Length: 418
Image 1 (cartoon, rainbow, N blue to C red):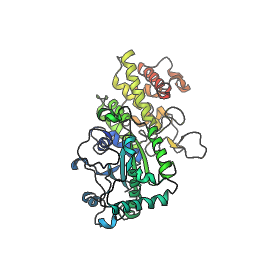
Image 2 (tube, one colour):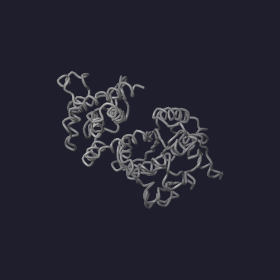
Image 3 (cartoon, helix red, strand yellow):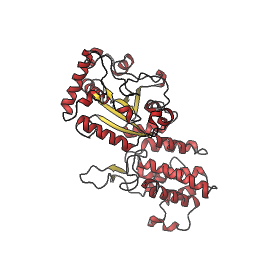
Image 4 (cartoon, rainbow, N blue to C red):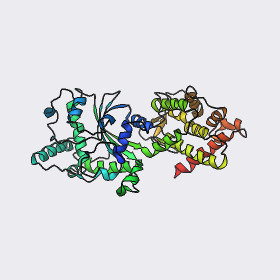
């Protein structure tokens, strides 16, 4: 979307943030993407818009279809007297299945979409109405911020914040338990290079998004902290595409493997857990990234030195070797470390019954998916002789076990240290 212009398009998108929001809504091609979104958000949602049956049309809140779905019986003029009739259109509108909260989604695939916007209204009355509303929330919540950026530079973010706070004041609890603004940032969007020449070579990383918003919030709001009621959510579509491609390689046991992955993606913290508390990929979604790295590395090694091994078995043990780090349903193994002066971002969940990571992995896997003996050995002994308990298997490892050990070490010590 060009800076400062409304996105009036409908229909199937081919690139950018609109495409990825549509993939969240219509889960056919990347079903795990919606689960990642829900895991980061904290609940599944029901999408009001866009929806495939409405040709993926995006709505403003005062359009007839949105009013009927969100505010039945409400008087439009009374509900929206803080803004002109020409309202912002939302990239996504959803309702939390558990919380009943209204989610207003603004999606971006690159920083060029999120900067340089100006208030473009022409009617003097409309301009005054908009500025009065923006000034109200600037002065109330962010008096230290630069108000000039609210109308020139980051106008879109400013009006999204204004709608967040007005809807919270006017619709809670009459219509919703809460209203939340989701700033959905697409990480590693490959379609930028394929379809948008001006964005070639500018894939955004999570760190780049965090730096961008930290800078914007500092200047515009006077604090680097995410505004109250706002969720800053990073959706790594590149990682999810790699993950989906690898999962699709399991063919002979597809149904049971799908049942297992449905369980762990929806009931455990597998999609969002870190890979460790202080070492490699100690970050949200680190466990998934590590598992994908190990699978890709193991398949490359297999092709070169052990082509006789089943690629399906390589995928199974690589994706599941650290599954135990996800914890169990309702009890993740790792929790955010909010203690003052904490030396690490995450801490061990003391409410879990202690099991080693490999044993917990088997505990989670076997009710859904039968492993071969070789696969079970590979998962249990994947740390090799770095773990004293593994000495009993020394010199008796199957090829699959050795290959997983090599791929795990290469991923953790080389790929993830870059």
